[in-house]
Image (cartoon, rainbow, N blue to C red; front, side, top):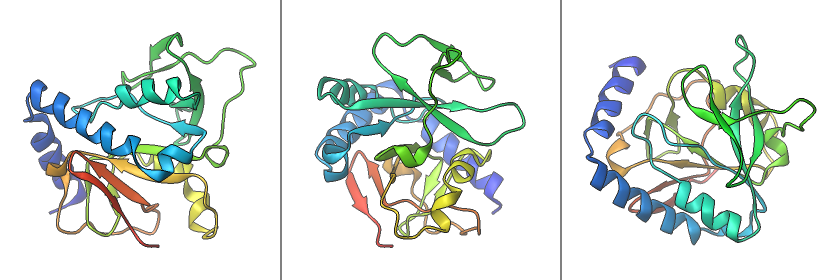
Length: 197
């Protein structure tokens, strides 16, 4: 099965979850992450807004905000760039749809954009994952391109990378490509699983 075929199959599997199941599984996932040591220690955390049936992390964002953590959302770069930037998020941040229709913070001229190495933790969406910490994204390569520096700096502890998914998105094994940036952990409604590096 090709990566594109696998994407289609797992996306369909995720989309078959009804709204009630998705909501309760998202709440359970957020509860597990709230107790995760990397989340508890982190001062600067990148989240994402749900799209295409992804887990909804907004309850965790609200908790992080209440705990005086700095919250960020990814922003897609220029049309031909595959790099993400991260902009601060607050409950009052105006959001606009990007070219994929995903809401992101409105970038004001002169406002600072944050690079990934300035963050403590990035919570990453994905389509599929395996027991070895490999993730399959939507196919654009945005997170892998943005985090490519980590492939050459093996002792950097920041940012920690935790994938978020529903348990039904796990597959037996994903082929690892040279450009893939592995996860430190995966969070699902069943708990948080750590990967050794």
